[in-house]
Length: 284
DNA sequence: CTGTGTTCCTGTTCGC
DNA sequence: TGCGAACAGGAACACA
Image (spheres, rainbow, N blue to C red):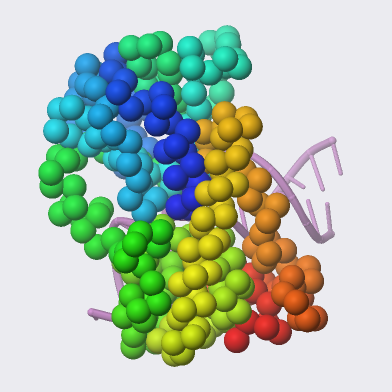
């Protein structure tokens, strides 16, 4: 589920509860997610205060007062929900009816509970020394943040220079740009009117400008939509929120292309084993 | 080095 | 209605 905008929405949803909070209890309902939890995971968390909640690419980073950072990735199906004092609508579940796939439960001093649910278990959590975070293999090779100040057409030109791979594959590569996933790559390419099949290194300057602007624009819009769902529904689970109603191409095979004067229909093809949606008529 | 295919896991949807 | 197949928002890893 979660690409950059969803993770950012989760971060904003959890921050008011988590930042400044002390963890009093951490419950693991199983020994692993995608990977095993690290040694003494619970002991290293309990009693610690969370000093900041950040995001890098699709990772959530909870900085602790112990010098370590709790690193969380939501994989395909991970989500958080808030229960307890800060969630007035929280349900009370009988023990036997606890929702399936709740794997980790963090309890704060305030009584608030933050529950991590992940049916497919492609997500994972680990603890890393905060001052060495950027050197760690998980982060060392990550590319540029598409919403950061350095991301522009010139940077994009460098990132794609000489690449023979299809444009879509290049944009999904987290070592180039970090945080884009299948949906927003499809959407950004449609906005920029560029074919996912184009050789990545073949874009003109004007096309690079259009693409940089499209990437930023689609991510900004999705975060904004996520933000509005947060305000309206206290949703912290990183669901696509209302932005899914704004998809121009993703999961819209056969629909009319939304671009002015384009008579094309959205097609679905498969690239690297994953669905690509685009308009063959106007994306060149 | 670059680029591609496979794999992890469960839930939902679709065609018969 | 049931039942198997296809597919799903990610990315680590193996390999050509």
